[in-house]
Length: 258
Image (cartoon, rainbow, N blue to C red; front, side, top):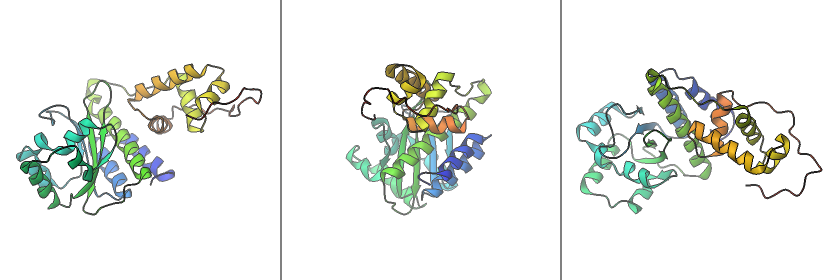
């Protein structure tokens, strides 16, 4: 599911989710397609990390979830601790390099293994104006961690978090992001593989202005990568088809692709 229609379908399903339950099912299906039977999307911040009313979307075994809460493992979970330190996905084998595991933390991992939660990849998440979160993909078997897999998990996790927050805050009247015309045009051209320089030539604006619109578009969605922006905008039908997809031949030398 790393690229192509299946990823688009997975993102579209998350976008169409009308309840947390539907979002959980869509996220769990996306996780299975990448080789992970379990997934946990959890909103957290400082201690106690799992705040009352936090967004929690998971298909972890019910008995493990009950044990996790009853034993207050969310307070000492090293996965949360490392996700506060990194801004990239990480495999659980990296955790020991960032945290000196205590007896209680080792007990947590031992308990998780009883339920087939042995190996995992966690994606740290942070959307402006909301607390941090993490999305963990886990299973009993070790999976080869490739750049393509990491990129896919990051896109799916970021998309699910944004969709989850939309559902979570719906009762408070908070609306989803809407791009301006220029932001949508720039995003559509990114989707076509254009560089900032090429976008500027097509739209007749400066390269710095292109970057400004792209930055604003990412801020509206609360994402950090252009791939995430494109994924969100395509599924939301906010990209504007552009017929001027050829750069004028009279333009000057092109800068290196960024």
